Image (cartoon, rainbow, N blue to C red; front, side, top):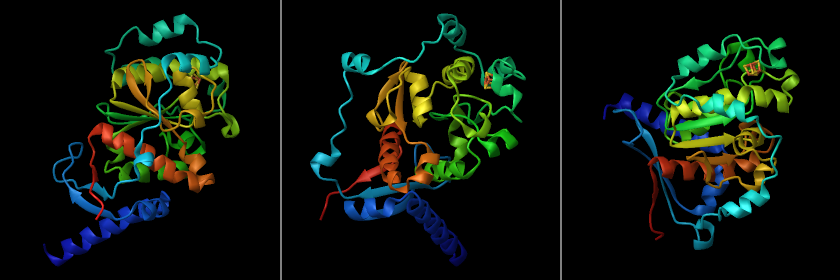
Length: 287
Ligand code: SF4
């Protein structure tokens, strides 16, 4: 390899390691033993584009056990439904599963279906590949997103980008959207009537994308898809079902900015997603 390519290669690896540091992974991996990063082709990566491969020593057996997913009966008991969406909204949301994202965006138009339209600057519909196998769903746009019309472009967005890249992907490989498409004033949580008005468009986006995995970022996304008001901590990191799609709730990047210690939990969740998507998470025997 020419010397300049060597330097570029080394710089890329350094950047990757910085992503891991920013995700708070150093303590996690110190606990877990040897970590080796290598460049290798990945099923989900473009030809010629290197992806991240992780080799690690196995965790103790107890730590490797997948947390038990609550039985349907237990889940039904555990979920305290929010105000249910009117059936007509569900019917409208699911009437045409073959529509494209563009058609859905056209239908949304310059939406005035809820009061958030009065204070928004730009509608933030979603961004990424219409063929994405992985979809991240957040809560709603913040100030940066409202200004640019794109999801997750502020500080939390930069952290999400780093998380995606740490998985060996790029933002253009995935799709990112929110429960509500307009910024709630002062970055407050979206209110029930706003979620009710806007979430049918999210459901239609998901049905258009038909992703292999949906990652819910934070409580609002998780509670909207599962119609539950349970805390995300009950289900974080567990595989759940949303209308036949595999869904995994994890913490919102904005929460991670306030609580960096939770980054290691999120990384464990993302490793589950990587395994599900066939991205490389190699395990080697301890020496
Ligand atoms: S939040 Fe959704 S429903 Fe409300 S105005 Fe914006 S696009 Fe329309």
